[in-house]
Image (cartoon, rainbow, N blue to C red; front, side, top):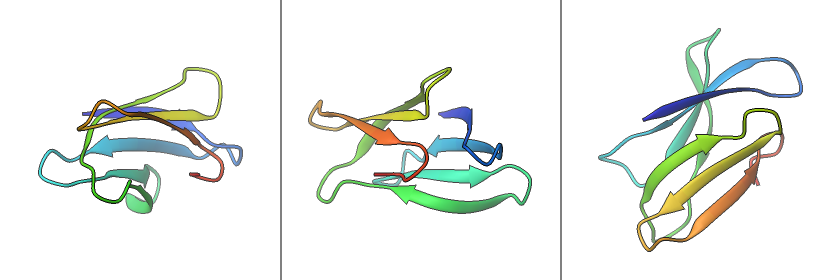
Amino acid sequence: MADYFFNRGHQHLMVTLKFDAHNSEIWDLKTRKVVHTLSVSGHKTTWVACHPKLPILVTMLDDGTVCLWDASTYR
């Protein structure tokens, strides 16, 4: 599963969900490198999406918890 977004620096980024891992990764599409990892201790990420206009990332955890992340700070 993957979704795409732009950050404030106008970088083309992609957030991915690896089904064999407990986290999501933020990739810089230009450099093809992971620039950040989103994770919540003790939980597996099961779903990920990006807001189409706002700098917001959304993840859902294995217990149904929905997490909102600032796409500028990843917090």
